Image (cartoon, rainbow, N blue to C red; front, side):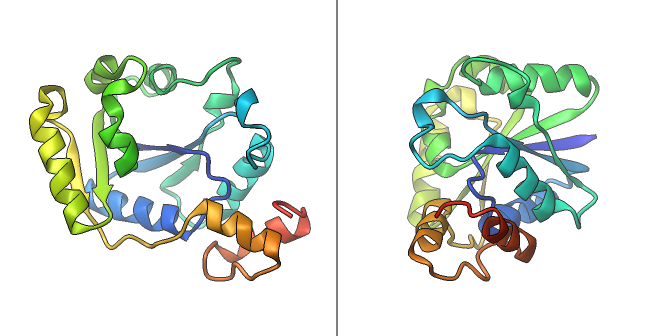
Length: 197
């Protein structure tokens, strides 16, 4: 199988995440996308990062309608810092004969060489990212051409849905609507559980 790994805080998951997943599903002809929420690092506990349990539940609500979407709680199996390298290594043991595509944001792509065991990650997956605007696309292409180890990475241009989790959290805090920014079941879950207030 061809499996996309889509990691992130998903605090909360929003329509921008889902639009990006849909684009990659089609472009890379993926059989499955694994949404992998990051575990809760101690230093982020006061930064508005809610529990993994809530984030996983919202992801499951948001992805329930697509059989090719799956939510993985793999990063909550371990203690300590959660490194992408360790996550991929574990996933390889679960899916030993499958091909992985690691979906990253443009900011993370430009910072990738600083990731823990970045070279090893590139031997395990195909790195994919998307530019949000034309000048960013050119910048990312230039970065790729200057880094030999990124030669097999894939840079795409999609119509990005401009939504941010930070904005959503602020809207909830202010009592503003988030309708249209997150799937309706996620909006309902946030309201019922008094999240981000």
